[in-house]
Image (tube, rainbow, N blue to C red; front, side):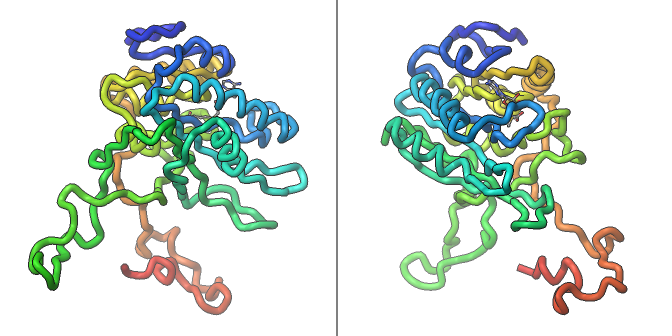
Length: 309
Ligand SMILES: C[S@@+](CC[C@H](N)C(=O)[O-])C[C@H]1O[C@@H](n2cnc3c(N)ncnc32)[C@H](O)[C@@H]1O
């Protein structure tokens, strides 16, 4: 696959090594159908320099202005964020601030998707964070949204109408149900099949749902903070064009390799729609040593939490 270093409408993948603004300024008005990204959270990860929160928001505003400019009239912008944690431990939910910035740019919110994952750091002075959000905005009221490619199985597909004119017929949509706005998808930890050296990469499935529902084959999908290229991988896997930037050449090199693999259908990916693993009590590590006793006098085992549904 050929990767181009400058924007061309004919290019399948355009990758820029450098700042997101230089990258976005190369892309003409209205060229991108979808922008999906997870910006740095200004929490001192190895790929970011911690700055005052006001300065951070100013930088986000610059990225959002350029991103809105390159969106098509029927396009979508999806900003995935968590919390900024100040030095004193105060929590700033970044999406609350991003929402205000996007509103001022004339974008309209369509969903605030909660991405729920079950693992992460254990906090001792607040509840452990187990979700982040994706704010999905559109540029106009006439936007692309294809529900069918992202439908999921119903819990009770065999349910039938029990009265009325449709009595006896199946009540659910045979194509599956709307996945809703709470997405339980494991994050990419060490034992994840998609894991690279990047400390916070997207699971491919998360971006795939956005690519499949908000774009059509041939459309351009842009990620101004590309990391190891998960957005671009999801795009090329489904016949879309991709563009992205990152300050790190190391991440971009991994992105190139992954995009090549994705294009060839060889990228190791957690299968879409795969259920989250629920440990069985036959797994030794999932069994609570008897001498621990019940937690708070009530809960003894995982099966007490994962009640039969
Ligand atoms: C949260 S990570 C994104 C990870 C990505 N979603 C993935 O799946 O690999 C944010 C990325 O933004 C990059 N970055 C930070 N500041 C940047 C800037 N000014 N311009 C472009 N990229 C930047 C970092 O190097 C980092 O890889």
